[in-house]
Structures are given as C-alpha cells and as structure tokens.
Amino acid sequence: MLDDINDLKKDVLEYIEVKLDLVRLHTAENLSRIFSNVATIAVIGYLLFFIILFISFASGFYIGSLLDSNELGFLCVAGFYTLLLILFLVFRKQIVERPVIKAIVRLLFPKFEDDEKK
Image 1 (cartoon, helix red, strand yellow):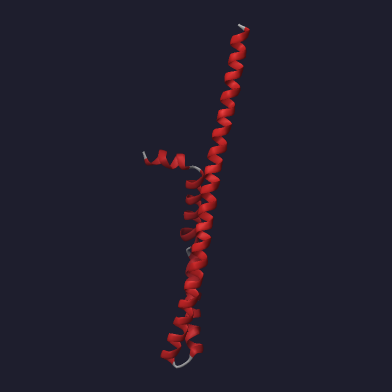
Image 2: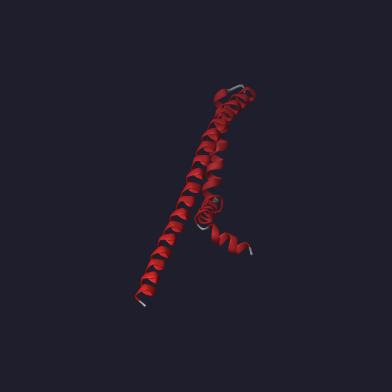
C-alpha cells in the first residue's frame, strides 16, 4: 500500500514537471514568434521609410519642375501626406487597432485559431 502511494506521488510529480516543461516550451515558442515578427516589421518599416523618403523627394522635385517652383512641389507632397494623415486618423480603428489585436491573439493563442477553422 505504501509503495503504491509512493509510486502515485512520484507519477504526479513527474506529470507536473512534464506539464511545466510543456508550458515553458509553449511560452518560448510564442515569445520567439513575437520577437521574430517584431524584428521583421522593424526591418521592413525601416526600409519602407527610406523608400518613401526618396520617392517623396523625387515627387517634390518632379512636381516642382512641372510648376516651375520646387517650393510648390514640396508643398503638394506635404499636402498629400496631410491628407493621408487625416484619413489614417479617421480610419485608425479599422486600419490598425483591429488587425493588430487579431494578430497578437493569433500569435499568443494559435490553438484557438485552429479550433475556429474547424
């Protein structure tokens, strides 16, 4: 009887240790996925910044040459960005908040996403 209790205690402790290892593995996987996504987004954002910067300069000079005034060309580019800012502020919930929330939930809880697809 005492041996059975000791075996049961040993099995329960082993089970708890395996469950903790599983939680650690899931946590490490989720953190790795999050950090790799953040790094990817940072690199893409950095490169996009420079692409947009140089396209903006080129557009400013091009429009300036059409209007015979670099100042007006850059003013037109600034107006375009102001319009984009206003649109972004109006539609930020649909453009940013909801997709970001969904992406974070998908990263942290991939199991639930698989359950929803069934």
